[in-house]
Image (cartoon, rainbow, N blue to C red; front, side):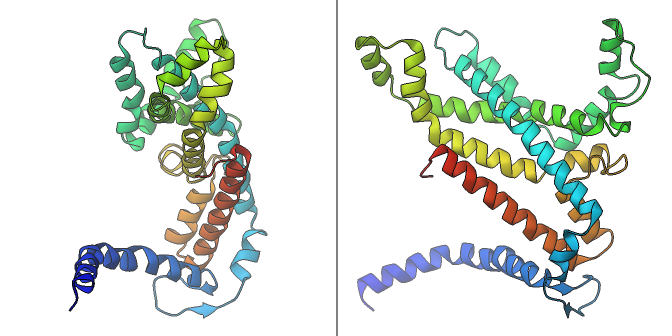
Length: 291
């Protein structure tokens, strides 16, 4: 055996554990669920009936799925601009070298990211209750608030969860954007100052262009996370009241693991996959990112 082939064999043996794990736990489930989406399959018995595109056609005739689709888009559009906007402003403030206590603020912003979403959701259920923090604050400010839970109304339940989600998520993105700001060389700003550039010009000519790869990454993962919203819905409302907080992934869970309609659930999963891919490609094109 030549030295080159021996090195190749050693390399293959090193990556073999990862390759086996990938094939069994990632590639096989992906391919199996894709095939399942074209079948009538409960998951409780091995019998599968091939039905072609019926599950996909059924999804777009399913009133609950269409409500979940609308709610998910509303959630994505209503949270991402606020999450990214707040994170960007706070990251820029943190990047100011004159700011004291930056480590304290970074730890504080990141704290919700290390707490379980279930725990956060339970805490906010109490705050949104009829005798909770929000109603108490509004009453103390003189507002006439009815004694109802914010999560019990079809009008306020989804916006209330969106507000909580923005609070829980922005700290993680603050740290990512802050890391991106730290990677911009100071020499660029020093050269711009020598040339007489104003702070606004430096922000638009140096900071934002250099930060574009980080922003694309942050927006992309935030978009994917928002499309996959589940834990908050499952813990706080279960999709109610009257499907007003029903989202695609929560509906997928109900269809697959409560009604045991695995074929239809797999079709919903692939519809979500296509939606996320389209939105991500549009974002990539809009930001003109090569990443």
